Length: 279
Image (cartoon, rainbow, N blue to C red; front, side, top):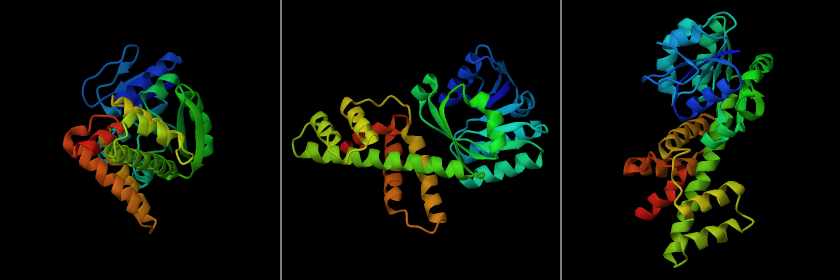
């Protein structure tokens, strides 16, 4: 298939490479000049969108999505299938979806669960929302880097589900980081504290893995603190829009924003333990 990828960040670059490896014809565009061997580089979002039957967007946030798609929409042709795979707010997904449909294109919001190792291994989970028939047409593309594809519901619900997943992960990361600091304060070494917490029935697999990473000081970025903070801010808005209280997620959002401001933004989510210990 012909596929264009808008955004060559850490995830977009790897997704484009997996598409090339699977034999697809790939066109790429990035805000700053960046080439990918085997792919055609477009000189604008509009040119990239008009070059392919399927257009994947992998951008940082709502603002980046609005900026790029203000141009890319001009390249959407009738029956172009747009896959918005960034982590955005549900409102932004619905806004973009409406614009694509008005241009006679087709739209799925399809954010991914997983990080760089998952895309490289082809085992991302994709949370898709939109028309199920469009999902069937998208499967040959998604199969290049996804191990699991789940249809969630109408446009916007995929983004909501992704924010819920990321918020649950981040809340656990913050809690584990604080508990390790507390136990270190009582004289229990971080590695021993992490092993103890992981061995308890209260520890989820994610919490256990986070504790191990924190004990090893493994902070090379897969899910950077700055993006965790962004996603938690979106999750707070999601919760409050439902008329619920966001006490726990707000606390986590504040902690990761503080960590970002303290210089931990480019490090992995596991670095929240080092930020907590540094205060």
